[in-house]
Image 1 (cartoon, one colour):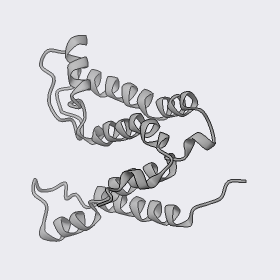
Image 2 (spheres, one colour):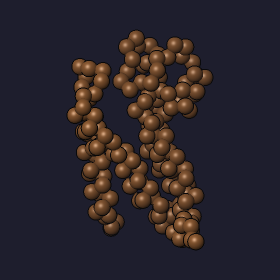
Image 3 (cartoon, rainbow, N blue to C red):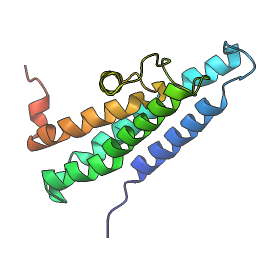
Image 4 (cartoon, rainbow, N blue to C red):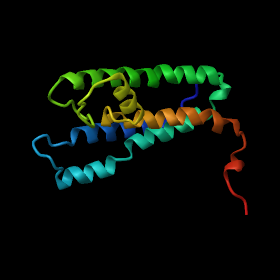
Length: 158
């Protein structure tokens, strides 16, 4: 049986609440946020970073559970494939629909496979997908960081 890390669960609960508050604080009737919405969003802004912090903390010891190949395969299936699939969907729909989709960074004038790849690699298909690129970077760097088994290496001793 896996040992639960209560503090990780509590941070995740807080981050989930923050994300819900952020997503529900938009006032659709105006283009600008009100002062209260801005304050609430500023307080809740660390939500995604809390998730990233928890991911890094819980993934660093993955080598005790499975190989790097298994680690990367699991992460690709959970993050990279959904990112690709939803990017294709947003790109295709936005290419043919005159009204822009929510959180789409730009309107596509000349849809093409080349334009899709450039937009995908630069993160310009959907503004709400920015965190996928951060998570993918975390997953790519984790095997390198996890090789270092001595935490003291990360500190400079004078």
